[in-house]
Image (cartoon, rainbow, N blue to C red):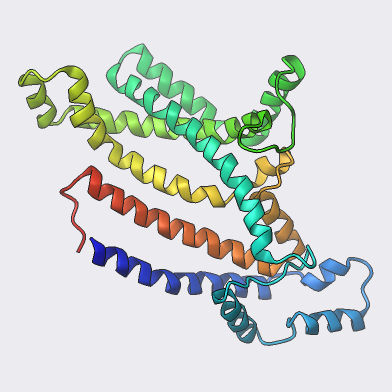
Amino acid sequence: MAKYIVRRLLWTPVLLLLVGFITYILGYYGPGDPVEVLLDQYQDPVVVERIREQRGLDRPVIVQYGIYIKNAVQGDLGESFKYRGQPVGALLGQRIWVSSQLGLAALLIGFLLGIPLGLLAALKQGRWQDTAVISGTLLFYSLPVFITAPFLLVVFVLWLGILPSQGWGGFFDPRIVMPALILGIPGVAVIARMSRNSIVEVLAQDYVRTARAKGLPEYLVYWRHVLRNAMIPVATLLGLSLATLVTGAFITETMFGIPGVGRLAIESFFARDYPVITALTLIIAAAYVLANLLVDVVYKFLDPRVKYD
């Protein structure tokens, strides 16, 4: 197991180099010039060229990327084009912390509601409770953000007046409730359906029937034999969901005025802020690599039969 983890970690820098290079190339040859976007209508060709030279944008793309990687290895992710004087590392650190809190709240909603609903649907398989749970969760999952967000605003802000409409105050601030619900409700549907199908499959296994035949109490059958084996697919979803904590939510953060990384990404795309875009891509890629590795490790603990060569 240790050799497998080390081998996966050694491949991570290679993967990040490839991802970063592709992102840099797409930004360099894509439409728009960051200097022209920065100056807007006040464009002087002499000033444009001088700024491009100062920022090293007049050099070949390979040279630019090589300098970027050299500085990134030393912990310097460059300076933002849009937010002049702001180091990219500090800028992303602040925004990722905000998005991580919002993502964690949505994740808790998804798993704390999804797993019990999936268990209920599995235990009541074929009955009206099963149909109601799956149909209800899929209904909310099918609704896009631009429908659920206004609906929640109308109900909780205009009609009931119990929640604020926008802004950010941290994990324990009531302003996190609505955006967390918008992000978490679709996850409830996915987790409930996955949990339900996995539990139904495990309940049909021979070792569950054997445990019941031996007179083991029903709650021990579910705890020792059903839930542990049924949670393997859910663990995969949990691992990948943890990676989304650093990606932010583009639409939700923009709609609710949350200063997270999703909102920063939208602003950086429109401003052609290459240092922020490249750094954000590398961080997200690293998060998914580590999340997949974490899932593989959790598999080993959930099912000792899993072997890694």
